[in-house]
Length: 396
View 1 (cartoon, rainbow, N blue to C red):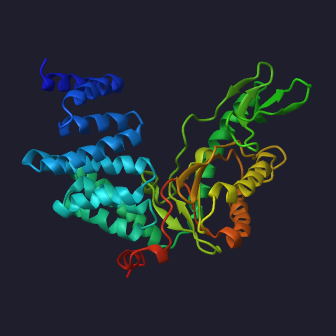
View 2 (view 1 turned 135 degrees about the vertical axis):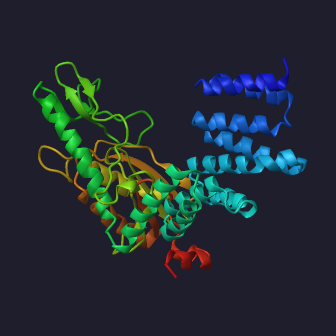
View 3 (view 1 turned 135 degrees about the horizontal axis):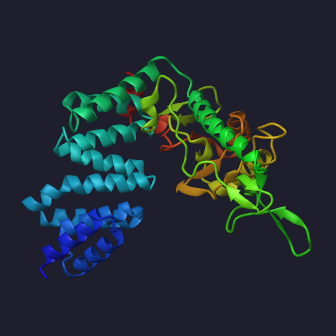
């Protein structure tokens, strides 16, 4: 069978939602035809669809090198597609600077490339560079975007984001909105199930060999990472979950900002704090970067652990409700930065206020360089930005 016939079968498998079959077919073809840039691009897209961003990025970097070596018309025509996919992989891997590089390489050669304009605009807004991103997305909309429907959606987003900045709305409102929507949803289900004898926010417990009853700590988790279940039937120990996906809420008057992250600063702290327009309360990302060359895990673990333990035991709720439910093992997203995911349960937003207050104690010995609450990328602090970027984001 000819190579292009096999490639078409692989792409048909991908269209039929069978990425594993597509991956196997494309990998086999590339073993015999490593020079085929189109096949390597198809494989990288397949890997991205499977959630395997690191292997996808490796394939894309190799494809870009191969295209540069071939330097013919066909290879040149593939470059924008390769860099779009590379930008996507870099975003998945928390590598915003590398994603920006790919978008800008496309725009250097095709200054009105709509997908690169839109992708870069949203990247910048999710990276704390809202004015710069808004300006670029407005250009995309005025140009017509990828069609009238996309252009209208972009204009709605630009209008909402610009109004948010112009009206000087406090970003804490995003946290309040997400918490409010989630806790209302939680209360609805909890009240209904409690009528059947279920218990809300119960701790997962286990009995040790010596008869002692202790909290369940997931395998590989930190010693403080005890877990609470949303709901549990005490008769059978059957657990119940309130929502199986992160719950995203729109802030009244700024609903388009629930479609993509806009990261803005939270003033009044001893160190830079940022909040995203997307901050799902039941799966809240919290990123922290320290400024001094040290082990971020060693620097942060005790403080994060004590904060979580206090919230697990009810410090940010009431006697009967409002406890932290779970915390992930931290991911190192930069050399000096960690990312945690926290199920905030029905805790008050004061839980975040307390966390930021406790981080102040670490600011002296480790320098808290930046904190981001919600989805997005830890912004670069102003003194590390190139002058033209700092000027664009200050509105100058």
